[in-house]
Image: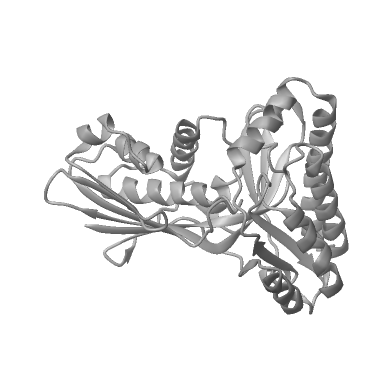
Amino acid sequence: MRIEARAPARVDLAGGTVDIWPLYLFHPGAQTVNIAIRCYASCVIETRADRRIVLFSQDQGVRESWEDLTALSLGKSRLPLLRELVMFFDPRRGLNIKTSSQVPAGAGLGGSSALNIALCGGLARVTGKRVTRGTILEIAKNVEAIVIRVPTGWQDYFPALYGGANAVHLERDGVKPERLPLPFADVEKRFVLCYTGQPRNSAINNWEVMKSHIDNDERVLKNFSQITTIASQMREALLARDWSDVADLLALEWENRKRNFKGISTPRIDRMIEQTRKHGTIAAKVCGAGGGGCVVFMVRPGTKHAVENSLAHLGGQVINFAISSTGLEVRADQVDLTRDEK
């Protein structure tokens, strides 16, 4: 049996970091607003006639071969996410697993979470585990926390699972995604996405901010309250298609986020934002936790190409900002086996 699975990365527009439990419980109305993009993390899983487990990360250039599942569980893998997921799904026969990603390393686009979701979907299919998308989300979130050894947020899993534009409502009685009915073509012409060439470590940045919040740092508490308000307003502005408000809120979100942790911006990021203003940028913010990675730029209609050229001249890697309407896709032997369960 051969299984192929893929899931899209995302661009977060507002409300990031608040999605880490239990931070959102202290901020009523907390939500994150994000968009799934056609930038995918993928895996190919093939069953073997023996019990051997072969793991291969195409992006990292790392290949490991284990005699069986017991050897994998006792060994120390350089691919800990694959290791933990294979152990969880407990295959009854050997597997070849190859992963790849269109997301640059440390981009802040939720690439590791997208790969996590793709692997969960593929492994569930190849092992015959009957799981809903909600169960896949729980598995992915918990396994990622085991791997990175710090709390994880919620927002990255929803665009990877469902695609589209989302407001993820973080409430006391649960986390609830809302699909935002946006005109994709109108959104795509207004945004530019660029990888700065500097990777970042979201786990470290988010953990530092989380510790400050738990320690009742008044500055951080105030910033999080403002970020929560901005996310709510961003949802309303997008639904109203008030692009002027969207730009103002994107800029305001970035200013508040920079106050949380001094390493969130970098001189290169600041230079890219400033230099592209003359070509059409009206607002910008770092994706994810910051400290490097990708920056999303909101531009005036008709200036997208000029801004992309400017960023390329500054040494950035422009990534196509195109919305993925679908999330997790799983195929077996060229037959579409994507599950529709919520």
